[in-house]
Length: 227
Image 1 (tube, rainbow, N blue to C red):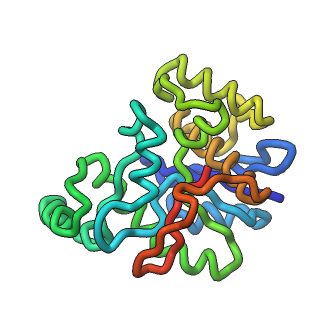
Image 2: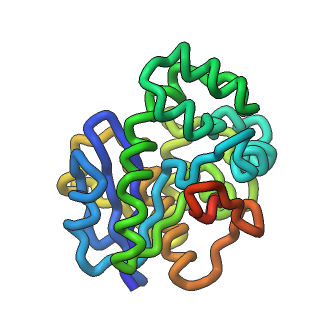
């Protein structure tokens, strides 16, 4: 079984392709459909990006995920409502989000808008084509491997080393010269790798779902974070 873990970065998307033996390849593309098209053997895709957008309020997976992360909850941004995200003006989107019960959100969260909507447009065709596509949050996945939330930021040397060691314990060793991903920031490659670990668990039927029963909105997508 071959799976793909995906993370967004400033240049587009980075993917780590994984099978039962370990890392198969890394991939980089500007658009998500281009990235996945370059991995024809993949059957499960995990993505560090929201999948399933609320019509009102805050997504249950965001609330539960932040609770599990505790002091590291800031690494998981609550996702604005669909109407707020399709709005092109940040200030107007804030008004809509608050009116619809999902509260305000930072400029950093707003900066993900383009990628969130890109996934939202791509997801229906991908699943119709037979791909299993799931939302994954890297810090929740690393916590599942370690048995507790990692206190060190992935952007520190200690945090980088800890995460590399945890991945190695799972037979996921990102090569020193990771091919197309060599120019991608190290933390984004790490995130894609641990998302691939969760995708492998999804394929094996051993992944957790947060919440246990996926939430559904008007888009019909089963909204949950897997780890």
